[in-house]
Image 1 (cartoon, rainbow, N blue to C red):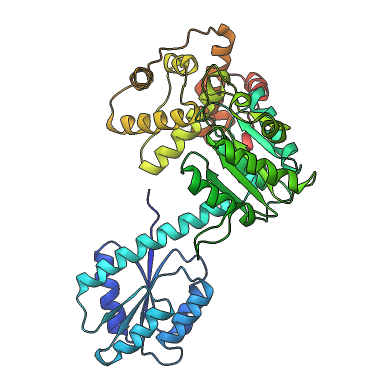
Image 2 (cartoon, one colour):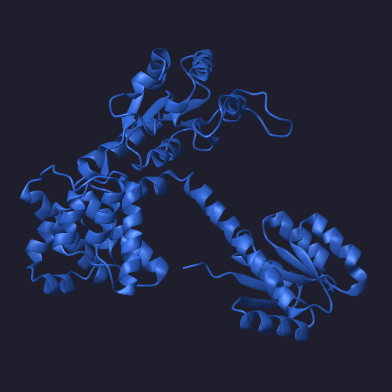
Length: 443
């Protein structure tokens, strides 16, 4: 669900505060009123989840002073100023300082609602971007996104922690949708360069000339530094490294060689796609490949990760159900088997899409997992995988999912889970230990 945005109304006139608050409340806004700038400053801080509407002329801290203090605290906070007829030049000055917009008295209430909507939409985008930047700099958060208990995922997390501490360049390979960019961010975030810049560019998104200028310069006036300089001291992530033209491969190799054995700028290269009959070694200059590939991570395809598929389905279904305000779909044994047997050509990205559609279908009370998988497989011209798995793998995966789902529903109540699944306490404890499930994760 969309985050509720507040509107802080600052005005020394009680009637004006009340009328603005009532009107915006009727338009669906969550309002909060303040009789002075001093009161507002005590309640409004950096990352305030909303916007501010303030009169300009107030005793004590007036609107202009309040605006300057708010801009110094959070320059991305939208502030709408209310001005009298003779104060338009002051309102224009407020816009120069950083005000979002201004309203001249007497103002049209519909105009205020329109401005409030625009301001809150901008604020929501600003806060979302901040949250994303924070998330991409938090190694703990990123590692938690690498969901799964399969041996392949355990090894991947260990590799990220190990290679994250190193200075050598890294090559990340794997099928589309396996999470290579997430792994690159995580590797940067858990290492000693975490406080430095992480700069990324797709080698497939630009012409050779444009890519050359962006990477090595010269860049257009006012466009900033070439990326190899912008990332100095941090990490330069080159996505779609297989698309890097040969001439630029040579320049990149020269840049790497000039840095020596302890590179100031670390390069993480990501290969997103290559022909089935070719390896990345076939697509890059041998000398560049061996410089980049001294440390290499190949991400496991989803179809090889066994019960991770069901774990991810459950976690994602809960997240989407919360977002859409409905119940998460509960998998049957047949649907669980179908998920385990699917070829997953789009890997984790495809699973995310299927889970979201499954939640939407469940909200309507129609559709099935099988139909979603069939539609996706037909679109990718791939049938269900013919690779067999031992029966025990299906049984274990479904059993783990069933206990996990039941623990979530009952918020970690062991007694309730025992009753629903008709399991003795000792048996439930043994199975939870077997599948790495801990009660405190559900409370």
